[in-house]
Length: 309
Ligand SMILES: C[S@@+](CC[C@H](N)C(=O)[O-])C[C@H]1O[C@@H](n2cnc3c(N)ncnc32)[C@H](O)[C@@H]1O
Image 1 (cartoon, helix red, strand yellow):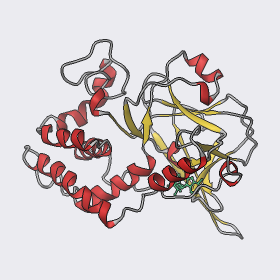
Image 2 (tube, helix red, strand yellow; image 1 turned 90 degrees about the vertical axis):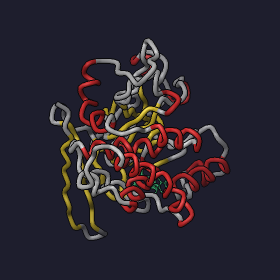
Image 3 (cartoon, helix red, strand yellow; image 1 turned 90 degrees about the horizontal axis):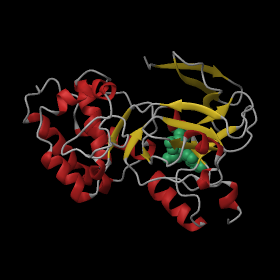
Image 4 (cartoon, helix red, strand yellow; image 1 turned 180 degrees about the horizontal axis):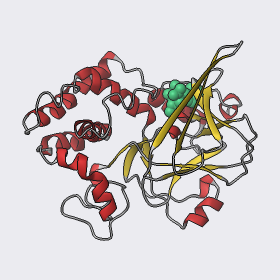
């Protein structure tokens, strides 16, 4: 069974406090990476041995995922794999996925989500759906309410916070009008909602299922990987610690479902930081800077940006 084991080692070094952390599954060997503090971009992911171009660095399963509203009836409600036949309601690609989703679906089915989903659809919102699923997972006791606390939160302006109030009230009201007890949703405060959303905002990946065989994709360069439109959004633990570079040395890709693969785009030395590109790298410098600042709250100082490329 997939289980994340979190391993932290704190060692006080002369320069500053180092945080080493490795996330690995109990069934696979740990990946050749570790999480440590960078000079200026918070925590980052570093290679613990040389990694060759094209090497699969590690795989990752999401901690929470959700289809986009427009994909709701055409992809698996759990792993986002494309369904052969579109459903009139939500559907699953396998009994295994249905089984994995059983606990949160049992909670979700107790409420009438039409107002909440309509609100997300009309406002073009995707992240509240992830918060809703996480809340159902917390109520079903699959995870604790502080599950995402380890991830870096976005800093939300007062204006942004006020915009979140309506979606929070809709979410809370849907649970309150179902047969879920007040005690079960005692964690569901505005503070919890904004804390989770602030983390999802910075750390969620837009899941784009690539077209082509696994072998083709592992051999191909990032730029040539054909991807369909996003089928959903997902938050992962270890991939959330990768920092951004407009000319990254690693890439995240999805072959058919939310199971993500982190792949080296070139040879990487032991001790080198691994980076991915958060945005479309083909945009010009000004567009990249604007999107990174507005979406992720930082000004990119990578080599490409510094040399006005
Ligand atoms: C997904 S997190 C990456 C891990 C994060 N550094 C941490 O400590 O958890 C994204 C955040 O890391 C920081 N970050 C990532 N790449 C950066 C870069 N190239 N320059 C400055 N800050 C960066 C920004 O604060 C960004 O919002």
